[in-house]
Amino acid sequence: MSASLSTWLARAAAVAGILVVVWGSVTSWGAIVHGHPLYGALLALTLLGSAVAGWRTFRPRRRRTGWRRVAAVALLVASLGWIALMAWLRPFSAVEPALTALRSDTGVTVSESPTRIVLTPTGPTSDTGMFFQPGARVDPRAYAAILRPLAESGHVVVIVKQPLGIAFLATGALDAVRSDHETLTRWVAGGHSLGGTVAAMQADAADDDPTAPVVGLLLLASYPTGDISTSLRASVLSISGGRDGLATPDDIAASTANLPASATFLVIDGAVHTFFGDYGTQPGDGTPSISHDEARAEISRAAVDFVNELNE
Image (tube, rainbow, N blue to C red; front, side):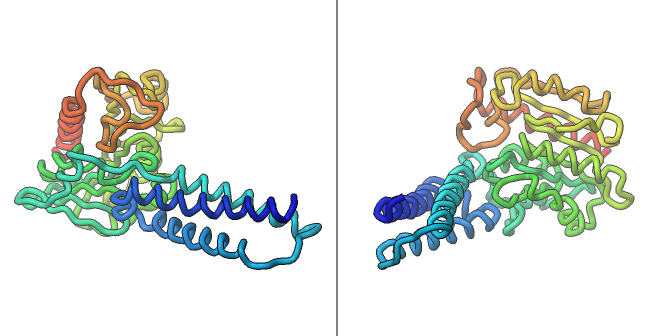
């Protein structure tokens, strides 16, 4: 690789890094600001690193030979991989009515920290809380409208802000939430898509806790990756979409063997993957045959009935 070509490739990579940060910030600023701070910090580092790398290409330098040339090529490849990762991690931003559902009123108080969103009833509160894991790379605010009815019915709802929007990086979140809400003696673990997969793992591990057990598992367009049919003690409600292109009806049907025989399966006819939150469209999803409002209302109603029954 000639010095001139390597210089231009390095400059192109630096420009690509800056453009990815700008694109991500412009298109998903709300999700970045209100999400877990790790992604925003990595974007800032990417911007700084790209700017410094670009500036260095204009400084005089000796011709690279031998291992230095190999190292330069490896660094360039790694940089491009990093930039691609930052682009892929850009979150799906929450849209209405989720944003309106985040406003506190006389019925529900909404609070936010760097790692969670909490919806707290202003009136009588049950001793059963709802712990929720968002889907992969989905703005945690996107679930406010679908989960707010639970808070309105008297249950504390905690929505996790996962590092980089990946539920597998928030496996310790349930323990942290339970320790911060000691007045709640029972929990329902739930999640959408990948979040539901991790919630199933967490429920299986915490359903026999002596002080604040997980008594319910709520799967929204999701399923466990392993067999928990005999180990899970918690009650299970699986709600899926009949036209989901990501967690397909076949996927949900295949998951029945991995869940307890007592699990309940509810299919929302005509619903798709993105109807379990409010964050726009998602590549690979199906085509709905009902409205998002209809699906949301049915999902929320089923979730409220499920948690209320566990609280009796």
